Image 1 (cartoon, each protein chain N blue to C red):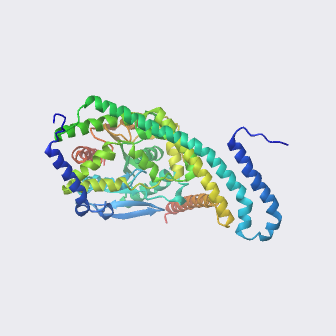
Image 2: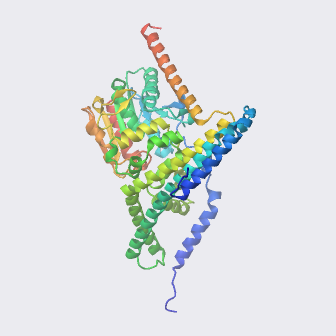
Image 3: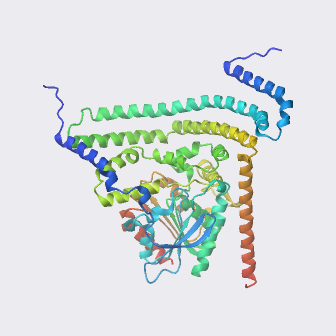
Length: 190
Length: 354
C-alpha cells in the first residue's frame, strides 16, 4: 500500500501523524500504568496538538495572504495620496506659513484618500477575511490550550464556557423569580 | 550658491519650541491616570450585576416632575456626558431643573459573555426604569439614549411604551444599511459568529482599531501635534487629556450582545424593517408613540445621520422633532455648541412635556 503526495505539506502532515500514531500505539499499553499522572493524558492527546499545529500552518498561509493585501492597500493609498500632495504643493516649504499650508493640504488629502479606502468594499472584504484567518489561528491556539489543560486535569475553555452559560441562565431565572415574587407581593398589597 | 536652501529662521524656532514642549510635557501635564473624569456629584441609586444607576444631585431648588434616565452607549464609558464642568451634558440638564439618572453599564468580563440584548433591554434597562418610577412616584420616565444606547432606548420604548413618557435619541444606530461610516463598513464584513465563538466578548482592542481608522491623520497625528503645541494652555491640555482618557477606556462588549448587534443592526438591518426580535418579541418601531426628539450631527463619522434619521420617520409618534446639528458625534454632547445650542433645545423640549 503506497501513499502518494501531491505537495510537501500533505507529506509533512502524513509523516507527523504517522509517527505520533505509531508512538501512541507502541507506548499505549505500558504507559497506562501511569494513568493517574498528567504525562499519560498528555501522551494520549499529543496527536491533537500535532494536528492543530499542522492546520495552524495552513491557516497561517491564509493569514499572510490577507495581511500582505492589507498592507498593499495601505501602501497603494499612501503612494497615491503623496502623488496628489506633490502635484498640489510641488515646492518644499521653507517658512512657517508655507509649512502650515503644506501640512493642511497633506492631512486633508491623506484623510480623504484613506477614508475612501477604509469605506471601500475591497478593504472591508479583505479586512473581514484577515480577521477570520486571525480567528482561525486563535481557535487552534485555544484547542491546544484545551488539550494542555485537560492533561493537567484542569477545566478547559469549553467546560468553563458551560459554567458561564449555566450561571447566566441561573441569574436570569433568579431575576425572573424575584420579579414574579415582587409582582405577587404588590398584587396582594404587601 | 544658487541652490542653497533658504530656511526661514522662524521655522527653526518653531521646531525648537516644539521639541522643548515635548521635553517639558511631563513637568506640565498630569498623567491621564491622575485625572478624575467625573465632575458632578451623584449617588449610586441601584445596582444589578455590574450595572449601576447613578442619580445626580440636584442643582436647582425645584425639579421637573418626570425624571430623565440616560442610557449610555455600550462603547466606552458614560464619563463623556460629564467630562468637564463647562461641557457637562448632565450638569447642564441639572441646571435646567431636570432630575437626571444615568445607567453605567460597567465593564463586562468573561463571565458576562452570554449577556444579550434581552438582558440589556428587558432586565437591566427595565429594572432601572422601574426603580426610577418607584423612587420618583411617577408612572413613566423620560428616556434618553446616546449612540448605541439610543438603539437600546428605542427598542425599550417599542417594547415598554407605557413606561416612557418622552424618548430622546441622540445619534442612535437604527438603519445599518444606510450607515456610511468606516465602522459600518467593517461591521458588515466581520464574521461575528466566529469572533464571538472564538474569543467570547468583543475585545476593546477591536474598537481601538475601528477608532484608529476613523480619522487616521487628524485624530492619529494632527491632534497630538496640536497637543504639544498647546502644552502651556491649561484649558486645552485639560480638555485634551480628559477626552483622551475617556477614549482609552473602552470596556469589552458581551459576546452575545455584540453578535446580535452586528448581525441584526448592521448586517441584516432588521430593526428598521421591524423584523428584529428581542427576548422572543418582535420589535415594531411603530409602537413608539410617545413624543420623540431625535438629535443627529452632520459631521458624525461614527454613526452617520443617514443611519440615525430613519427613526424619526419610522415611529408611530405624532409629536416628534428632528434636530440636525453642525458638529460631530462627540461634539454634539461635549462641546461649547452642545452647551449653547443642543442642550437648551433639549431642556426646553423636555420641560414642555414633563
